[in-house]
Image (cartoon, rainbow, N blue to C red; front, side, top):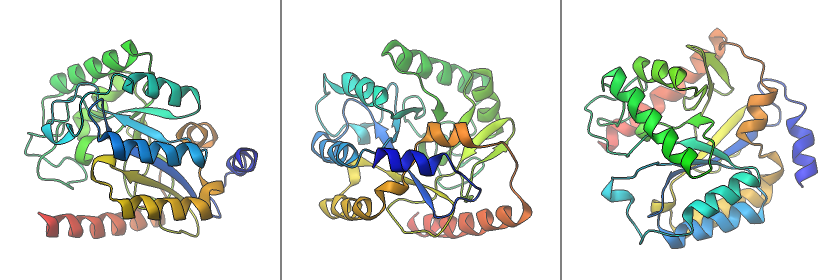
Length: 262
């Protein structure tokens, strides 16, 4: 299966046909729900997926304290990175106290959007230091609650982060000197073409969610690629007018759902 998936990944056309998928796991920290994360990690290993692991460097969000701190957490992150997972910097402390939704405006409160640029730069630098001290090398930014603004993008560039997992396009693209690899799904949904990132939150996943993911992986595991392979194969370009319209339409649908929730 690994060999087949690598062959697919080496023949990208944009948007890729048939569709390809990335798996992203958010809110990872030593106090992630131990049982749910164990079940999800087992599925990742069973189907040999190379996920994007979005780690909160210094969690202070009480909602992410679902289990006692796991002394083996950092060892597991290092082991998964060694097997092919990509490490993402998921904010700094996950304290979403800024009343600013940022560029995507998908949440009323976020951690980074609206915060002074120098403070954002310091938070990003501190977060990178924490993860690097654990032997991890974050390659991509994952904003808590999709909250980032133009200052965030400048701060990321100044700290050496060149890629972001966010947005609603069907394919990677460059913007403001950064590589955007979109994140459009929160469950496995069959698509005909394009690149689709499925974002999961272990703390809130139900048994039904895990069962649905297993079923999707059984059918489509060969179509899963990795963040690093996409970044290596992609030749930087901006979105075409048609793709911008597609992305805007998807964003509007998602915004409507979020506004209904709030």
